[in-house]
Image (tube, rainbow, N blue to C red; front, side, top):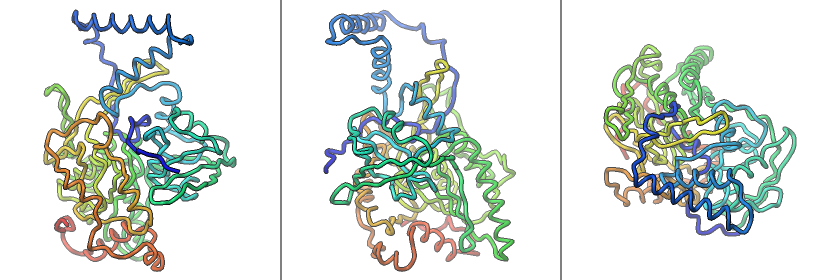
Length: 454
């Protein structure tokens, strides 16, 4: 089976790649409609009336109005959209939720359902589903160019029940079926483990209290090290496949490791509305007390993840390792309209402390490390969808060199080991293994951030 051409369409589940702020609805400018605009609204109403009177089937007002709103916001950029019903409920679940289902973040890509990432420990992850997989059929029914919310609803259901997914995976010759048993999904934004005297903290999304959760993780890791008679020699902050979330939580997480300086700036249309977020030592300075930090990123690390990576990179507090990030440098504001509807609209661009915009180009790692332990990773990387691939994306104000972005798809001559060889060595996650090994090699040295770029 072939899904071609895989040209990215507008993301329906744009919370997955958003830094989101919640703002009240501004009404002061709603009456500022000039004569020309008023004429265009007359045209819109005329078209509405023509459709109502002449379309082959009767069409409800709700359908036509929703279509007009969707079209208006979709004409702006891929991350501005109208939310109601299931789409609004899904956004709220991503922020707060607990539900029964498979544990997947999905988007619509060229009419197909594409997996952004399976949640760690979820039924989907245990079944072997991977970021970049395409779900073509659910229980044998083709889901192509259908409403994404319909597919999401089909995948949810009672815990213990099963569903058969047909998967198209770039790099594989043919699609294959995977049966997944639904479970109770409790979204865990932060998980951690103590491994070889290194603390590994995985931040899966930027929902509420992520900053506090990571602070607690660091405290627990120090206790684990003491109990085991060892010493915490470094931290890996794993932001791979983290699609973003709350801007405030990205700032809070960055503040954990910084005792001064800028974190990110948010610049909108009006200069007097620009905001600068600085380290405020909310957590009483660098809670890691100067421990070396490696931040792991990949093509699925977006928006809020890029804010953290950019801040720690520019402030020389961490080494960024892995692959170039998604490249989403815009901020969306969530504006409720009533209890059942809202809009999410792009209101600003954000910039790292050095003034760099990650829009389109993303964050380039200090040390580029491919995921060699995954035999399909290379094929998926060649088909990876980033911000620069999205139709209608905002253009970076600084010119980007295509040749620099193309290097992401080239083999790295430093790494010749195969996935099969790594499996024999018991290495299931090469990027994480390389990060831990780097920290162990530099244990006791003054500044890991001084590692030269590769």
